[in-house]
Image (cartoon, rainbow, N blue to C red):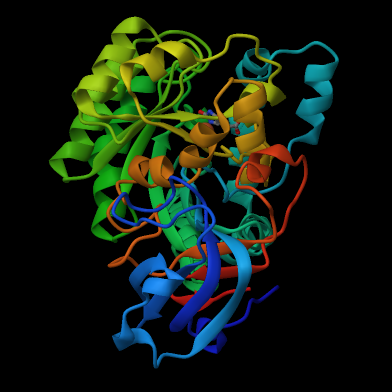
Length: 416
Ligand code: DI6
Ligand code: FE
């Protein structure tokens, strides 16, 4: 099995990082550095303790070791706030079937789709799932990702959902990256419950979720609310079970049809509603009122050759914060580049570059409930930032294909 550098062997990032250029809008509002001024980030015990113009560096930090930033562009660590990274196998055959005319829904109704990955995930051991997910995670991290959400939902039975969530936790420890794990037991109806959807949802709510939460494996709870998955009433039942355990909720909402799931999720204080291609005005109003983040997933839109774009103008007009994520999964978004998603959020969904960059940093942090510690360069936060050899921050969304960073500081350590 592949291994990775043990965390302890990564050098700590303490010291003065200077001179740098700071990406506009990705620092806290109290950080004032003019575009032509060199900046400095001071890290102590893995925490950012000061950010500002190099010329104004307080004398108390002057003794710290200096890291030469070579005037590179600094951004916060990137955040992929919606992934299904842990699963067995792959589904290239379905890609071919869709090219030959089959739809995502037809494949799902014929027992393929999510259920194909459920079979492969159930057949794999925990260590095998870890070995398969690790190179995928490494590829995301190499691009500057410092925090990631990973959902379960390919186990659909207690032991197998546990296996996925345990792998998510192990990946975080192994790679020194913040992993938020989301229980998505209500992703699809497992074959042993065919025709008994209510019985499965009862199992999810009364047995699986409480057990996995008690084991400390669940940070949030998600549901696939869709005509090929679970109804509004079933979604509500899962949300109520989550809330009894004090867990925040989020939703795969209005991806293939309008189920009015976003409004329901917002009423339950959802962190985010994700996909949103068929989102209604009611859904937008409810998300706005609840402060729920809209997570845009252009990889799934592209892969499924969807033509219905999320109502971006209305979301923007309502002031709903918009995040952008890979939705990495073996069916509808086999994508391992968050920067490519930023590009596609601009080209396919018409986000501005500034919106796309906020979407993979500060708004993504909010979608995970981690807006106070991640997603912005600011003092008082763990050191998570990335240095790029780029002239302009817009290049992060402009290039098609990998633009590897030159330095990654993750969880207060120099990771690359
Ligand atoms: N929507 C998605 O984008 C993923 N799950 C979901 O509910 C796709 C999952 C898959 O096709 O394997
Ligand atoms: Fe998804």
